[in-house]
Image (cartoon, rainbow, N blue to C red):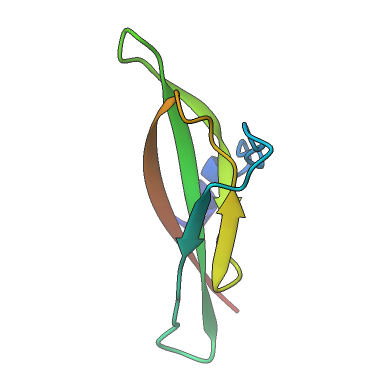
Length: 88
């Protein structure tokens, strides 16, 4: 199962800011229940076209308490979050 999750992450690309201005701030906190594992939080961003079709725009890694990204104000977006866990 872990291999399937890792394979799914292989196709992710970093989200490129669509705006010069960082107009969206994301706050995240993760906690592992064990010293032998870690939790990684990522945020997949999809843009929506006028026909309501989703297109993958990129992934933001939430490895710090907050992250700022730039999004066009006219663009619709769906944010889908994913969590992955690793055991050492």
